[in-house]
Length: 286
Length: 227
Image (tube, rainbow over all chains, first blue to last red):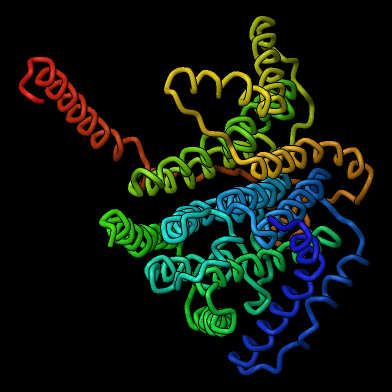
């Protein structure tokens, strides 16, 4: 583990994440035949949000959102300092739990439904991301992001199923349609934004920053599959993100049972079968 | 469960400590999840897969429960707690012990659990030092956060929740012709997927089969049929 990397990451990630989201909004706008906001729009948004008056339904809300931001930053920093993938995933889950509790505490009809749906999405997401960590362990013999990234093994060839499964559920974490049940992105222009309904001002800004961290963390997971060739990894990340945007703008939203069942099916078939094949392959000493 | 935080704040607080102990750092994460996942992956990925799916479900279950407890509205007057004194004492002791074990967990692991495991099975393995530190940082974050409530308590203007754009009293929808509707919130129970009716039959049949298998196996081994 390299703590210095983690610290550098904490400084750089919000900028990287903000720019990624900015380009995301621009490209999405072009897909919808709009001009779209400037690339730096997410930063303008957040700076403005921090100027706004703090209005709350329940004062404990802001506290939960602070927890969300801190844990999300911690989880991402842990990943980029080369930490244990399982702990990264748990820290990420913990941060999400804070967000959900923040929405619950407002006792608002829209935030409540958003929180419940967010929990269902978490349940849909969790098996696949854990299977990803498991598959990477089987292939490289380590749960540490550091050793996995440094491994010369072409993980994408050993874990193609896991990669596809992760690609499928990653749509949940990037809050893209068809899985944007709990709250959608800017591009879909919702009036009442599900789980975010009762957050405003600096609190909403903090959620936005946490989303930047989350996006960078998710793309970091993609990087691990291509650790043997950083250039290829960068290409893969760009292609994959573009595909996510494409899905986002072409699919209608799923209902929650379909979202849950299809994510679990992806984890069960793509993820699990890949891992079993790899395991037999390793056990067989081939 | 809803409004418990207002009606029985002490019980709700202790319940929250219990839930946190069950599924957050360090027990729910380091011991029940990290250690099992870590152990299963070396032996059998199928078990790892089962644990991975189970992990998602526990998060859903516990977080939903926690949310229900902290989600508060309307009647802000605390009713007089009618909890039995004995029950309160037991709950308080359990809550205190949960906190103590969480904080003292590395010591307990090193001086109690590991020697015992080593004495019983001949070998014992340690949690990585880096992981313990990471875990401790997470625990510290969870423990420190409640204090920030003191800071946030004075900040921000309180307004009622959004009720479909029409101003109304807190937690009431205002409809046409002066009609008002009280807000009611219910949980998802996912009966169609994990409902009792669905799981009961499968569970009972699996249990019977497994028990039978176990007995047949044990008796045949005992009778010397099997090597």
